[in-house]
Length: 138
Image (cartoon, rainbow, N blue to C red; front, side):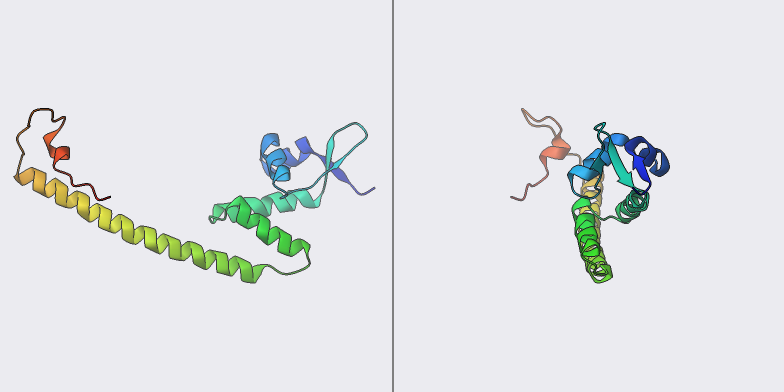
């Protein structure tokens, strides 16, 4: 039998909590074998795989996306095309979010400037007359 690592050893080598390793395994990102004693045993490749998962998460990949990449790899394919496609989607999503945030910032600046020059008088039942002037868009 090849060298096997217990879950605590993988956790120590990767800096990941034992619970996280179990979670990754439940998602199919890692695999282990059960020994006669009931312990989980991981191949030495598990450490590299966990490091890969952590790197992919660091650049914004979800565990689901990482699973897709790992599945392609396990089938013998090089998943770099998928990785580039997923990365481009993330860039596009970020661009959209940035545009939305810039518009929201402009909206907030408009309220700030409007409220600085025109303090509305409270009406009966108002909590804050400034916020009461905000128009909700459904």
